[in-house]
Image 1: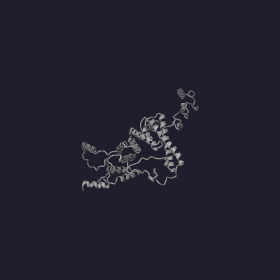
Image 2: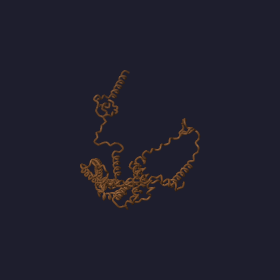
Image 3: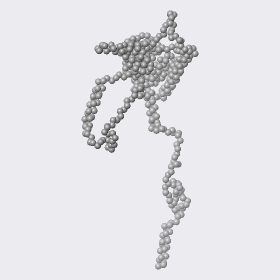
Length: 427
């Protein structure tokens, strides 16, 4: 079979563009981002090799799939994919001739003399093998990171959207800037993230009402980028306040619309033709791309408004708590990023308490000296000290003073002299 015939068979096996885009969108909705990215790549390779206004939506969707796949893979489990099992470690191999034997030597040898080992030759061989591996690795290009690939694809989409006119194209451009900001935030390029989020916010503020949740989201993303940038606490506070202000205004409008909202949506999903010539079909989703969602609070039914009120109220409470923490940090004069503040607080805890729990100053202290039994020193009656009170210089009343005691030595000498005198007289 010739090369042309093989290419024709391969082209026939590839589904049409609309089918591929539909499969990719379904996979993305099911959070199967790797499959979605692969399907979008197949569509681009076969039907849209150049980024043009007609194919730019596919590039945007492909970049978003790569981004979500990178975020899902870059988790705390060390880039482990869902369902992927860790390789089992091989069990140590035991030689057949060593089974069932007992060794009393240090290395478990059989008693035979070990062959001579040339350490220099082994080291040289290992060095040559390492150099060979480095050369082989240098020849093979490292696979492109998903974040980097996503950035390249979305940047192509950005340059194309910038050449297009109309509110819809501008909203798509703003969405592309938001995705680029997310990549920079994930890869810790915070200055670039701030620039991208600001570009997206500028477009959204021109085309969307202040109560749209996309406005609050853009301000919140900006606050996250400023939070990770040293010396930007005031900027962080500014954007958290603006996000909170947008949500509160939205909450006010929702509460006003709740009593007038319908219980259910109309049965027919059609709108009247402005010329009165029958019914006009509602705008459908672009099968080969995507359409920015521009919400209308007036069209929400009662259950949707109630759910939205609950959600917005929860978000507002979280932002208020976050804003209070940031202001307290600013009042304490603790600058730096969130990680810097956490590191300082941890150092203070370790330095204050040492390696053990600290004891409060006003905590009562138990005196155990009364429970300690001391060894009593020997004391004779002639010493004049009470043996029951070894440390007190109290004289024993049962032992008279030395001045009042008779001189036993002198008395014995006088008696001896008297006996000698009697003996002389007898003689």
